[in-house]
Length: 430
Ligand SMILES: Cc1cc2nc3c(=O)[nH]c(=O)nc-3n(C[C@H](O)[C@H](O)[C@H](O)COP(=O)(O)OP(=O)(O)OC[C@H]3O[C@@H](n4cnc5c(N)ncnc54)[C@H](O)[C@@H]3O)c2cc1C
Image (cartoon, rainbow, N blue to C red; front, side, top):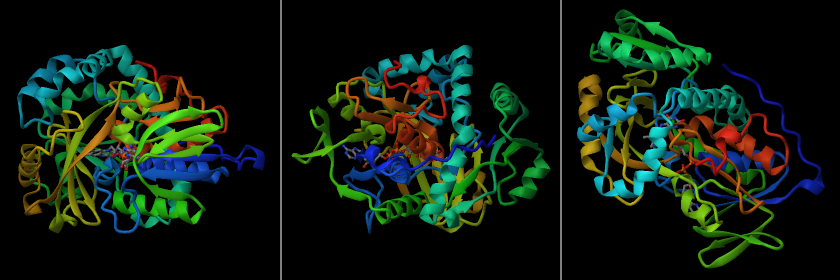
């Protein structure tokens, strides 16, 4: 379902503020642009923003599976996950892995994750995700136009494939949930799949095509285009790491490399790194990370026409401007552990089996999804600091929901009623 959004009107001069946005991932960039569109002066701070020749690889927004995914109403924790997780975790080559030495730190998050997997919770969460997703494309359109990023969009849907009838039927409840929430989808036979994607090895029995999904062929170029649009519109981007956010009598203070910066309002959008900064403002948020990986197959960009995912393997294969990117899987292990080459080897082996002509993979990447236990983002005001708004925790849907998040952030900063009920996204909900 694709619902329009009310047009945001520029604020009168007296209500325009200086807003500092912490973090130049897609969520920060879209927030900055929507804030600027309503008339605020925006300063964005990031140690490695998408400017000039920056690699930008530290941002999760760099390395994702490039897919705008309106079918993403199903949260990660679904009924029965408590019985499936132990088996998955014990299989180091499965789509879900854990860094065992991180388990003690992860325990509160994991408990909340399991508590979110009841039938009632999944219904509640899916309803909220569906409400967000229904406006997500409408929020992207003006920003894509403004940034001249239309050329990056490839609208060809997204394909989920199953090797056996048993696997397909095991996903029944997920498809029923999607259907209840109006996700456009079409069941495909083996012959349909072969005609859509002839280069795949014939390791499929049935599939589902999500027609409304599309790809940004380079999330990196998308971020650079958004950053350029921000600067062109008068915004400022500062290279620096924010170490604390604090209330001041005359505004809100940010510490950047020992120096102080003052703004009227701040937006915290530092992705998986936001928990520490929220703590400096006095708020405890149950944010952790689901680490994800990608491998690039440079010569294979033409082999597929759309993102293809075998949920069994847990990664997408996506044709993009640099080649074919195989991206996904989940590793629970915090921000400190280095890239685990066994995880990327698993992706390489998977691609070799599913798309034999893909050739050699290169450019291995590890990124940190900012994840809340209930698969819902945090969008809302700090409990402690009235001039601080939080926008992080988008998990598997950050590219999809970043523009809408920016729209909602600009409504919050302007003191307007948000177009969607944000109570389920409160920062202090755990
Ligand atoms: C393998 C993989 C595949 C994915 N596929 C998809 C997909 O197909 N579709 C989809 O919708 N989503 C997908 N996602 C999820 C999506 O990429 C993320 O949810 C999204 O990128 C998060 O954006 P963000 O702006 O919150 O965080 P980030 O992109 O991580 O940006 C945070 C920024 O904050 C900066 N920062 C950190 N600390 C500080 C500090 N102290 N001061 C200042 N700045 C700071 C960082 O430098 C960074 O630039 C995928 C994720 C992964 C890992």
